Length: 355
Image (cartoon, rainbow, N blue to C red):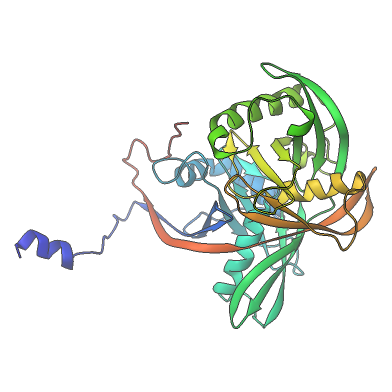
């Protein structure tokens, strides 16, 4: 064996220079949708609430969002989160959601993943059965239940914030698609819901339509943003924006799932999972249409075939809206542990995206 190869086998630790920033993450996925959990090395965020931390991060450290999520460390569909203090001592922790466009208000797949990680890392006291976590997201407090059997997390369900319908069967003119019929609803974030059965599209919701779904999802989102002025949260201005388009196939799927979601969000990201906040909004839509009742469960699959279960727990008045408290169930898995370094002399240190 030559000396060079011996060195390769024996010298496996790299020591970054002192002026290099080091950020540690644990990477996960929920139904195929990635989550890069930043656990160490991120600068301290200032504020007194999750929304204030979110604002401070956006104004001062957005270059770290792009560095960690964009190429060469990530990709156009990467997703991440930063953990912060809760809004008050009754909460366990707060969470900020990061994506290719900026900062989300709610993310169900991240709630499922971080609840799983909280058990795996023993951040909370663990017991057999359901383990309650109170997580402060930008949209409000999310209650999650990580189920443990024989010391292992077997699944997570969460109760979302009050979710409500803004409009049903609205229409908008979209270039290249004509008149598109859509619903507008909120499940921690506002989405445009487009049922393909109500529209004359020349594409389906399979992986072969991936590029077409991105292009048309963005067209519809931008058209609705321009035409529909009802995307207004009743209590918080920072939550009042349209996050994306969710294409829906409501017919029974070959897998046995009740329907399919394909969400195009942020700057053309394609959700690999059925979209937890999107399922929450769908529960509000289906309840408004009397298509789901208490005690009933709907299974919704994604473009990758992964499945979330959605149901309605309760109803309440929420500003001018009659809202539901949805429950969403899914599973998450750890994929790796990373220490990312940022060399100040690297001309691409802040990342880039090619779509």
